[in-house]
Image 1 (cartoon, rainbow, N blue to C red):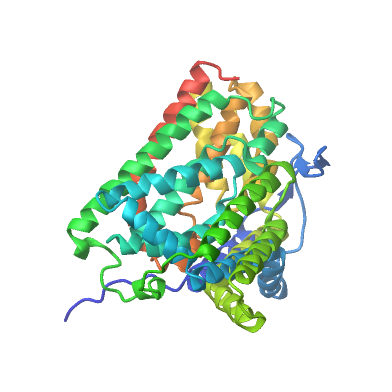
Image 2 (cartoon, rainbow, N blue to C red):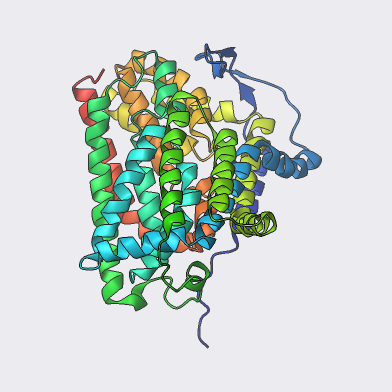
Length: 459
């Protein structure tokens, strides 16, 4: 008999499995906590060296069940912003704006379609390295997918173009306030210092990612049957509008508005401290204005919004479910115990070895805390204090945090990656098979960077 090919369980089954494993760990790992102080920015940061084991009730079955709706509630900002992204996307699709853009790009790159990959990855990476907002992939994915598919490539090519582009920027963030900004503030070093070193790493990371995606796309273009998405029937979900659209004055007016609105959004992110409540409201405003430019009736506009909500809903639920895992860790009082164990492992190591091990520590810890800012608040006070003891510069410890947090986001099934995969209809296992070569390259470059940073005592 023919053996059945293993199929990855539904994303909810994967998350529920992780959820239950974490729950059982709360019974096995001793409970403990650090003292915490409020920072100038209003965050609660741990006090290094203040860890104590404590007596605390176990997480009850009712708490376990309640964690899921609580996770949805706590992830409300992200879910709201994601739904508004869906609404904006459907308005752009139904008004023909996306098709006009796709047609224009196809004409520009008709002689060498491979060049669309760096053309998209570079601005996505630059925008993400400045803002640190990986969640905008919820908008990029449905826009880029039909474009890449119409150029003869597969969904994995489109997905990797978006994810590896944004990840290159997020991992080596230049000015992202919630990651590198917060980590450097906790470490007590000048804000956004060491920029020249991070720029070099950023170029190396992004160049390697672009070359890898282009190599894969060329292979799939020559032999489409090698694609994990080959003839699975899901491409049609992203190719509903087949006819080209002749641009009108309304289209040009809408593009001008969208360009101006995007520039103001960047200003809001960098200067006004916008996050997904503000971003979601701005996406909604953009969707309404574009619909009005095309004289779309209110009822039809509402139908478009509903279609957009349905597009994003699965990804939004995945985000909320992932947050519920963090709630179980917090309620179980084992997060600080894990940090304390890692703190003990680092003590007494030579500085170069410790720099590499910091990367390992941050990579491992990111499984338990999916938020980059949350991880910085928990680990950086410890890493910062240890850096002084073992001779690793504070700047090096910040880079280790960035690398460990950023790269592991691409494969841990407890964060946004499952939401992105669900949106693109790409299997988690297929993604891991695709991802590992570029991850090996990134980890080698990252580890080498940490060794060099230690040797030159990067400040």
